[in-house]
Length: 126
Image 1 (tube, one colour):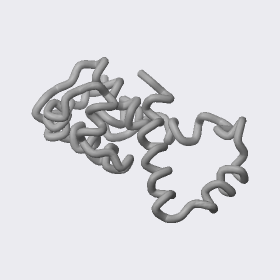
Image 2 (spheres, helix red, strand yellow; image 1 turned 120 degrees about the horizontal axis):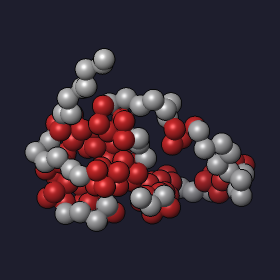
Image 3 (cartoon, rainbow, N blue to C red; image 1 turned 180 degrees about the vertical axis):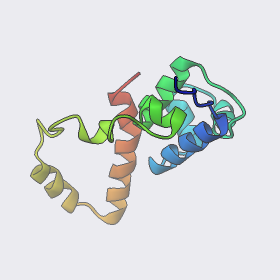
């Protein structure tokens, strides 16, 4: 029988912080989206607190990562949230999106990127 790997709260916290930063969210913005205090999120990111399963699921959903990835640093699914959804552009083609983005200034592109990262957790609520 395989020995269970210990759950390391510091590693989980570091993965949460890394993924949050990849999304360009401040700790305060992230906390607001997942409806927790930024103090509590800070404790999670430092590995000082262990979260409940519902909170872990909410965090994983918001960050668009699997529970396996958050807990163990790897996933049985190969980038599930990005590649396994099939054709994500059923209603708007890649060409149309590119045409719209090509009209944006660099500052506008940064705003669009931040908006997408902020809205995605609400599109896929836990």
